Image (spheres, one colour):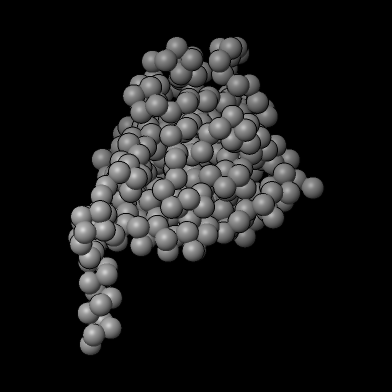
Length: 360
């Protein structure tokens, strides 16, 4: 039996009673009801997931999955495929955007190579390569079904190891030249939206490259005919090794009972595949930001998620997800440290409303 099937029974629903207790707690803090908006909503969801009214999520990690894409041969990126390996080296040296943000906001950075073409990896990068890059999906499947399952296992295994080390929340990000093409193809399959509506500029491609990218996605879907009812098949036919790895990370986190903060379009494509595979995993997902990539909005709608940040970012690497960490930390600090109306010897708005309703 494959790992994703083995963990299915371990994914529990968030605790509704703890969520109610968290809501009561927020309603009794010294502020108007609901005045902290999405921060309250986020903290209450985290309470249900963790089973704690005010959880301690100080141990956080960002998991960056890396892989190359055969579809890069179609001229869909502004950068050559070799940049994937160069960026992996950059992660190891601490010079990438995600390194800066992870350091700044106290997150452990874990870089995993699931399928790059790099000849040699730095010692700090975890080598779990299933194969050296996917095949060109415009001519046939990006990978075999077995390879997609192996990549899923990479994500599950890595999250389980992080949880054993004490991590209580993860963010997922990626690196792989050509992966916005694969992510958009996944979005087209799962949302049913036209490729023209979904396709963005990725690494900053010009108008002619956008046309090539759209055509590559259309051709890949036409050649492979991925079935949205078969998420493993979708990942294998038009996905990427790092995308399947992130999907596995989502499943592993849900099975371990820890929240997952998504980054942009590509990590959300992975999360959507994971949620189609095991729908109960979707309750552990949090959207960090709204990417400038048009497919992102539609996939978030499919997952029923609303992002906390809208900064027109499209970098990837997990940068938007880690930028969301201080918002989450702030929400939990408010829940932990704010005074209640009872502390001031006053009835809170929730109590006053309940008294008014009983009097009438």
